[in-house]
Length: 153
Image (cartoon, rainbow, N blue to C red):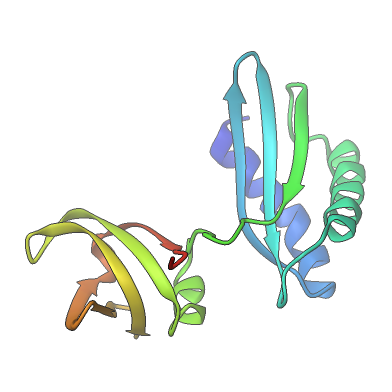
């Protein structure tokens, strides 16, 4: 099974349990590092997650993955928080980040730049509006290569 199919299968297994228990699935990665495969599941909830949350989710996923066996290779399962600079993978993630400090990269230049960091002022599903310093910036969502929360020092 390919990595995208494994990611999709894990998302299908995890999402109902996570949503029932107040968690949000942020991302799933299935990657080979060195000679080992890693299945990484990034989860969050309002107020953040702790080690006990990760442990409970890991136990649930481990049992479900053993039951359905969608991954042919040996792998290490890791469940963790996406961290303070969590990625904003889905439109819903971007919408929830309005008012927060973000870092965005684009596939091609927008007004001469491909990297933007500042306050996310709004998102209507098609256009991201930001304040960077004292200027306003609009970025078409279909040009966004990556977006994440950013820490301000």
